[in-house]
Amino acid sequence: AAAALIRLASDSMGDDFFRIHPKGHGSVVIGEHGLKANSLVTYYRGEVYPSWRWCEKLDAIERTQEILNLRPNLPDFYNMAMERPMKDPRGYGMLFVDASRKSGLGSSFSHSCDPTCEVRVVALNG
Image (spheres, rainbow, N blue to C red):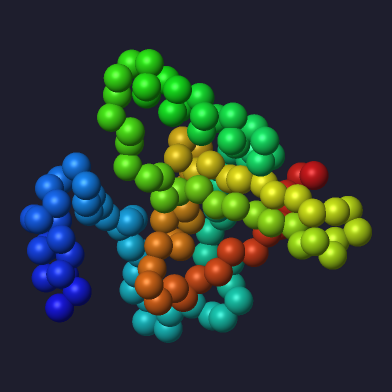
Protein backbone atom coordinates (compact mmCIF):
# COMPACT_ATOMS: atom_id res chain seq x y z
CA ALA A 1 0.00 0.00 0.00
CA ALA A 2 2.81 2.43 0.87
CA ALA A 3 4.62 1.71 -2.40
CA ALA A 4 1.47 2.54 -4.37
CA LEU A 5 1.13 5.88 -2.56
CA ILE A 6 4.78 6.73 -3.21
CA ARG A 7 4.38 5.90 -6.90
CA LEU A 8 1.20 8.03 -7.10
CA ALA A 9 2.98 10.99 -5.42
CA SER A 10 5.99 10.62 -7.71
CA ASP A 11 3.83 10.43 -10.86
CA SER A 12 1.78 13.49 -9.87
CA MET A 13 4.78 15.72 -8.97
CA GLY A 14 7.36 14.57 -11.50
CA ASP A 15 10.91 13.36 -11.04
CA ASP A 16 12.33 16.74 -9.99
CA PHE A 17 10.14 16.93 -6.88
CA PHE A 18 10.16 13.38 -5.57
CA ARG A 19 13.35 11.37 -5.79
CA ILE A 20 13.38 7.69 -4.95
CA HIS A 21 16.73 6.04 -4.43
CA PRO A 22 18.18 2.97 -2.71
CA LYS A 23 19.72 3.17 0.76
CA GLY A 24 22.57 0.67 0.70
CA HIS A 25 22.68 -2.86 -0.54
CA GLY A 26 22.02 -4.85 2.59
CA SER A 27 24.14 -7.59 4.13
CA VAL A 28 23.09 -11.01 5.28
CA VAL A 29 24.87 -13.53 7.51
CA ILE A 30 24.62 -16.96 5.94
CA GLY A 31 26.50 -18.94 8.60
CA GLU A 32 24.56 -21.79 10.15
CA HIS A 33 24.71 -20.31 13.67
CA GLY A 34 24.69 -16.61 12.70
CA LEU A 35 26.71 -14.26 14.88
CA LYS A 36 27.16 -14.32 18.63
CA ALA A 37 25.66 -11.35 20.47
CA ASN A 38 28.08 -8.45 21.05
CA SER A 39 30.62 -9.69 18.53
CA LEU A 40 32.59 -7.34 16.30
CA VAL A 41 31.35 -7.59 12.72
CA THR A 42 33.56 -4.97 11.07
CA TYR A 43 34.97 -1.49 11.50
CA TYR A 44 33.20 1.65 10.29
CA ARG A 45 35.95 3.61 8.58
CA GLY A 46 35.99 7.11 7.19
CA GLU A 47 37.44 10.59 7.39
CA VAL A 48 36.67 12.30 10.72
CA TYR A 49 35.68 15.99 10.74
CA PRO A 50 34.87 18.39 13.59
CA SER A 51 31.45 19.99 13.09
CA TRP A 52 32.82 23.35 11.88
CA ARG A 53 34.96 21.68 9.19
CA TRP A 54 32.05 19.40 8.15
CA CYS A 55 29.81 22.44 7.61
CA GLU A 56 32.57 24.17 5.61
CA LYS A 57 32.86 21.08 3.40
CA LEU A 58 29.10 20.94 2.74
CA ASP A 59 29.01 24.69 1.99
CA ALA A 60 31.93 24.34 -0.45
CA ILE A 61 30.17 21.51 -2.28
CA GLU A 62 26.96 23.55 -2.51
CA ARG A 63 28.83 26.66 -3.80
CA THR A 64 30.69 24.61 -6.41
CA GLN A 65 27.43 23.08 -7.64
CA GLU A 66 25.92 26.55 -7.97
CA ILE A 67 28.96 28.00 -9.78
CA LEU A 68 29.16 25.09 -12.23
CA ASN A 69 25.37 24.97 -12.58
CA LEU A 70 25.33 21.35 -11.42
CA ARG A 71 22.24 19.66 -10.12
CA PRO A 72 22.70 18.75 -6.43
CA ASN A 73 23.56 15.12 -5.80
CA LEU A 74 21.25 12.81 -3.93
CA PRO A 75 21.78 12.74 -0.15
CA ASP A 76 24.79 10.79 1.01
CA PHE A 77 23.83 7.97 3.37
CA TYR A 78 27.35 6.94 4.29
CA ASN A 79 28.03 9.56 6.94
CA MET A 80 27.71 9.23 10.68
CA ALA A 81 27.55 11.81 13.47
CA MET A 82 29.17 11.00 16.81
CA GLU A 83 27.98 13.09 19.72
CA ARG A 84 29.70 13.49 23.07
CA PRO A 85 27.09 13.90 25.81
CA MET A 86 26.48 17.28 27.45
CA LYS A 87 27.39 15.81 30.86
CA ASP A 88 30.85 14.71 29.70
CA PRO A 89 33.48 16.57 31.81
CA ARG A 90 35.33 17.49 28.59
CA GLY A 91 32.22 19.31 27.33
CA TYR A 92 29.84 18.73 24.48
CA GLY A 93 31.25 17.82 21.11
CA MET A 94 30.20 16.53 17.70
CA LEU A 95 32.28 14.72 15.11
CA PHE A 96 31.23 13.60 11.64
CA VAL A 97 32.60 10.50 9.93
CA ASP A 98 32.51 10.70 6.14
CA ALA A 99 32.63 7.17 4.73
CA SER A 100 31.95 8.21 1.14
CA ARG A 101 35.57 7.87 -0.05
CA LYS A 102 37.55 5.97 2.58
CA SER A 103 35.21 3.33 3.87
CA GLY A 104 34.56 -0.34 4.30
CA LEU A 105 31.58 -2.65 4.35
CA GLY A 106 30.49 -1.32 7.76
CA SER A 107 29.28 1.96 6.27
CA SER A 108 26.32 0.18 4.68
CA PHE A 109 25.18 -1.75 7.77
CA SER A 110 23.10 1.00 9.37
CA HIS A 111 20.56 1.23 6.55
CA SER A 112 17.74 -0.96 7.76
CA CYS A 113 14.22 -0.36 9.01
CA ASP A 114 14.83 -3.22 11.44
CA PRO A 115 18.57 -3.03 12.30
CA THR A 116 20.36 -5.88 14.02
CA CYS A 117 23.73 -4.12 14.40
CA GLU A 118 24.82 -1.12 16.39
CA VAL A 119 27.81 1.19 16.30
CA ARG A 120 30.18 1.36 19.25
CA VAL A 121 32.87 4.00 19.23
CA VAL A 122 36.42 2.96 20.04
CA ALA A 123 39.77 4.68 19.51
CA LEU A 124 42.55 2.75 17.82
CA ASN A 125 46.15 3.90 18.04
CA GLY A 126 45.30 7.11 19.84
